Length: 136
Image (cartoon, rainbow, N blue to C red):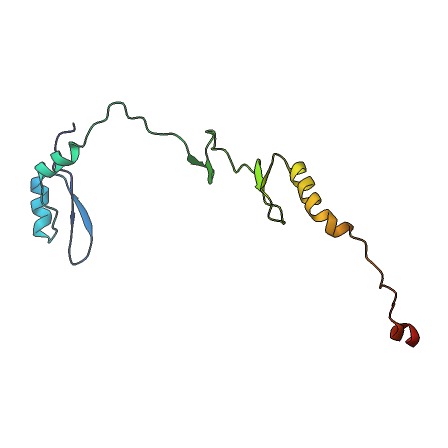
């Protein structure tokens, strides 16, 4: 532990806000005559601050750190979002199915939407009632 050392001490003039450094007690006294005031010395507070818990096995982490204005972290990153396997719910309310790839998903969606796309467009049915046939 570093021993308590009162000097050099920073003192300030309250009216002008100018700072000065007192080298020892006599220099501090001469600065005090000029109106400079300094903080009170407290050796016990210094000892309390120096007696922080010591962790001998502590190792500071080197990464991540800023290099040339960019945050760099070469450590492996956690896995990103995993899209597959994915559960799909059919539009008819049947049980969900699980697909393992984009191809399986596309095939399932095609199966569910294909009947609507494949339905032939029917032409207007010919009129069969007598009034409509007579008007034509």
